[in-house]
Image 1: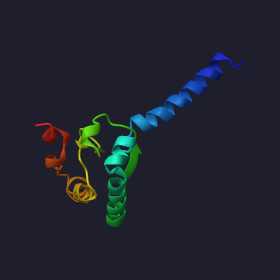
Image 2: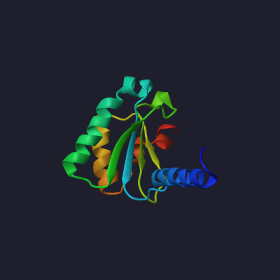
Image 3: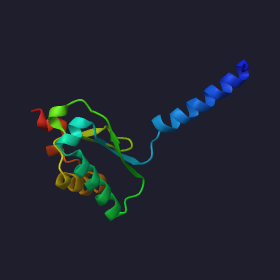
Length: 123
């Protein structure tokens, strides 16, 4: 059996690991919805286009990752962009061509491609 002090030390180590993920302020994250609905709508080529364009441009401090269902299946493929210090932007009905444009305009130049966002699509 562990002592209270040992359990508290384990708890602190676990909290530090979680805080590293949640409090991360550096870097950009591109998250592609890759659940069954996203895959059926073409998310895999979209994710590949993001990875290829980021690598081609040698962009640092960026992570391209996948997630499960984002929740609006009729708008798949869906991509969320997290820029440090900014609100998340959700892009919908993505294509590989749109992915390249988003890297060039949004990620590199800081100008969101509003025409592809969920807010524009819902109007």
